Image 1 (cartoon, rainbow, N blue to C red):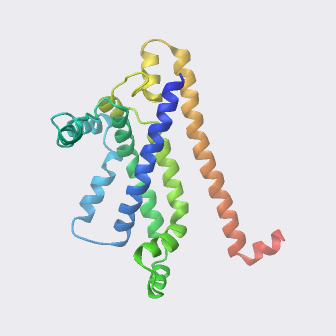
Image 2: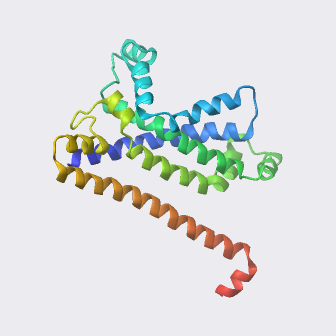
Image 3: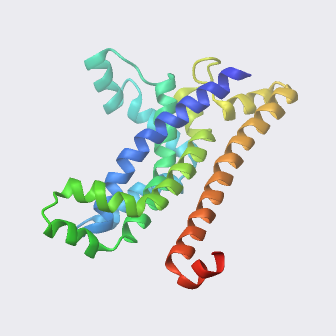
Length: 233
């Protein structure tokens, strides 16, 4: 029972790390710049959110298989086949959770006052310094929400993972896969226990996010409203 839990947490955390970096950078560009083909690119970014998981899994299988462009390249350069390994599970989890992180990050960056960034530039700050010292601190509540949602989505990924990573106990069997095949074999006790685990993890993540958001809102209201300060004093 514990192997799928440990593997799912590892897969979700690594996928989250990849999404946190890539989605944040892509969202920063998309939120601040206009260029030809932007709408098409953004549609492709969000597409994994609406496509059936089996369609995504099939596409990944074509891409990562021995005859696929990326799979053939990895096999030629490193003699490494990613399909039916836990790295394939990470790839699937990262792809399906990427749109959630991207959407949250883009909304967070769009809410940042561009005049504050420009003021930092006029004081001689480089673009990276502006991003790290001004943009990120102002956008981090939205980024944090995206991280939590992406983690929960990566943790519960099933369809694409099954197609591209398979169900290999101790190797690629995540919690959703273990639940499905436990039900198939009639092991309802194992399935129920794993359902409780993944539900508990997801609720805990969302509960913490809601609690944190409420506390931040209360702090903002107290700091931005002098009447609130007098009331609480």
